[in-house]
Image 1 (cartoon, rainbow, N blue to C red):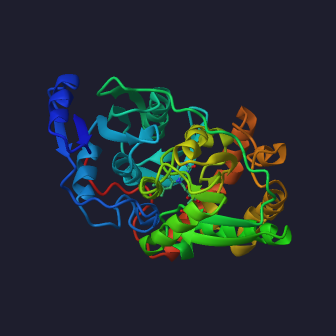
Image 2: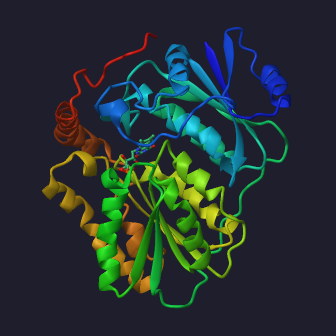
Image 3: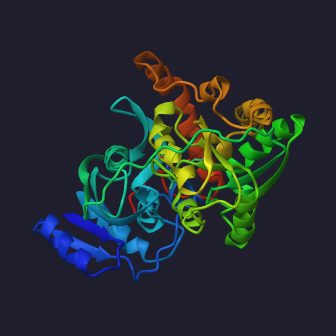
Length: 391
Ligand SMILES: Cc1cc2nc3c(=O)[nH]c(=O)nc-3n(C[C@H](O)[C@H](O)[C@H](O)COP(=O)(O)O)c2cc1C
């Protein structure tokens, strides 16, 4: 069974879809007039009601179809050389297909599958980075145990996005606008804990800072104003399905292409998985983004292993986030993340075979046990690997 999730309203696209995907057992789901919210990262589908999303909207029916499918084609418009927020939103909501527990598959740290494998393909409209989208399909499909069906442009304007100019500001940093791009409410956001630790280092280095949270749409106007009227901006956010969360993309799509004055945009990217390689595709995307918003690029600080900030005991959380103080000091000094010290902060790109064995035996057992305990304390009455929908 092939499910085609079409997020493009234009009627002419339907004919193109029909010509391109000729599976006898296919269903086209047009999502334009459906009520589908962004994933808010609440973790309930992993740790409270395994496999069931907390958001009660039209996505639940889509999920039930995906559970029965072998192939998923996403049909999406593009922005910034990548999917637009409507397309990305469909993929961020796919998380209940996976289980929170982690293991190694094909040599990489990944979530365990809740159901069977799903192959993923993309039909996209507009100018985009073809290579980036192809790689995104490969990575996203591999996360759900499947293979990529390819990324196919619906028109011929596919093009490379230029990398942004590197660090063009000469002035010493005095003030930093920080935007938390996590969809998770501030109180529970791992990014928030990282930001506040990083800010200790900023303060020691004599830099003032202000924070805006995209999880609250009420803060978007102030975040936009701060973005447009300051010269140093940092967006800190969690990796979501191999790239930027759909909510953050939606915010970025509301920004004008030009900045009021010379400005530099840096990023702090973190995510659940440990290995640096997990973040490289998103880093490629971030390289091209500032130039499309009228800014230069101040680098991306990358570090994995942040799942446990939510679930581990307080003393271990403190240990996990403390290295960010040093990164705050470094930013206060340099004004960007382009220095070798910032690049080194990521850690290992991929665990070698022996380390994988040891991590599996010693560390992941403990981590998965911690997830189970967290779920029990949260009132979860089902096993984490529960399958609420029939395959
Ligand atoms: C929808 C969704 C998708 C995610 N995708 C990834 C991913 O592709 N790789 C990864 O390492 N972590 C992924 N994560 C984990 C988050 O990056 C991680 O839990 C992070 O610490 C959340 O930060 P926050 O609490 O500020 O939202 C994902 C989480 C969610 C909810």
